Image (cartoon, rainbow, N blue to C red; front, side, top):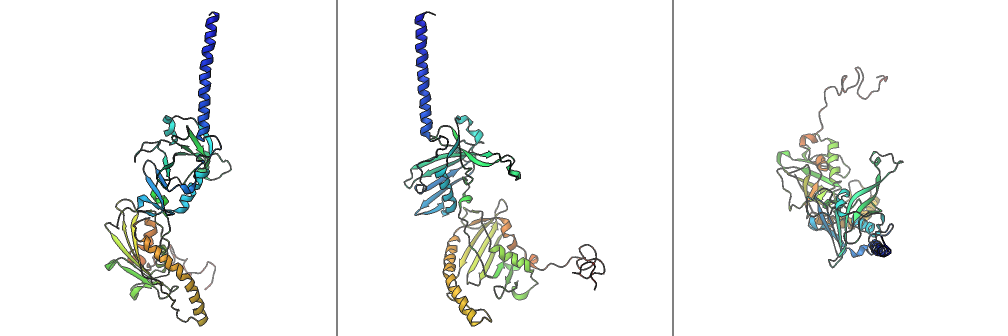
Length: 400
């Protein structure tokens, strides 16, 4: 190699090195502009108040949360009220989300971290959960795809499910905004595309029940009580009612919680059961339930009628000072009761999906509501009974 050739080679190396350096600084510049720097916020310009639509989509589900005049609703559930607390928590996490790890991964590797963008229902394995935010004009604010949860080893955690580590972050990609994949500072457990997850869970509360009727015709049973704290009995006095069965049915009615809102317009099924609960507040809940065609859940709807009385009716043997005190207490609670009943009448517009377990105490047959006969051996020696010569309830060693 002569001097001239050597100089030309040096020039070529310098040119290539300069181009490589320029590309390197370009990549670094793009990395910095992407906001993927460790410790940087993912959405530095996001303000929670700007988001008026949230869309979540995964391989099987899709839900759209819409805000109108300050009220959030679930589009796929006929505009049913959304859980404002859950939405506020999600938006607050998005505002504060920071990058704790960054990897320059190609899109071909995204499925390994469940970061592939969902296209249609039934997307391939490795699909993530898409989250899109829009403003009041329908313009996109952000597009993120959430993947696998990042685990952190915690040797001091004794729980069995912490063997592989505890949730500490979440893999995410932001197409067109952040290069590669990043791990966020929060697991984002509430990034869920199931519509039922986002429904407001405030439900009707049938309390102070006076009578409860279940079923129709020969299968019907009806229980009643004279006063709020009286013993339950069968209406008409037919049969010996099991007190625990009665209390179980009434308590279940006052603690109902639905899992989802159905897209069905009415309750349908092979066996439809009607329940009617009358309260001491002059309110009547007429409930219709039917088992779904698939699965164990029930379709559930209720209609509330009646209005709370404007004044309280004193109970028997109440003293004058008690009547006055309780009347004042009732007047204070009346406004809350009226507001609650109006809200519950609105809830009656929808059909709900109810777990079978929550309805079981109310769907018992009449025979199951009766005091069950004692089994052989309950009152004498032998299996299930006291030793020979001992009265029921006596302890060993006690004399007669």
